[in-house]
Length: 103
Image (cartoon, rainbow, N blue to C red; front, side, top):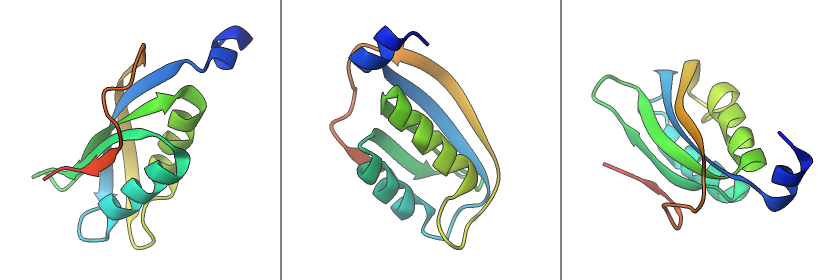
């Protein structure tokens, strides 16, 4: 990535799905909290397959920090087996104004 793109703060969007023990362990609440701390927007929700899915948008460095959190940290009592990221792309503007839990 060029330094120019970094300086102008290229916006990124990425979809994610987290596998492991991620339901019933406050994973969504912690995800929402971490996203707000980092200053990224998007959403998170449980799936019927027992995973957690969602989308993150924001400046590339902050999205990367969130991806790292979704891969390695999670909520205190969760166990992350793996995290899949898809549809990673540069965007011109954010589609969301905050980070929310969907049901």
